[in-house]
Image (tube, rainbow, N blue to C red):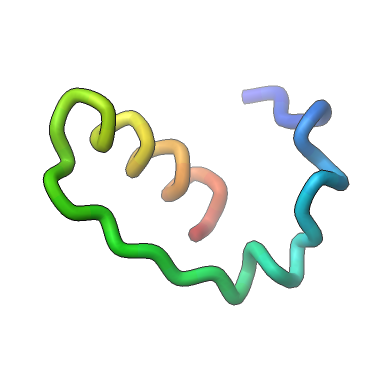
Length: 41
């Protein structure tokens, strides 16, 4: 996955310390959860 356009928008340090909670992972939440997992969040 090419994420070069998103690099620099948010610092890597803030991403590495980010915490999230996904509730009701349905049609929209499932791809979001996968993407966040690939990002390391």
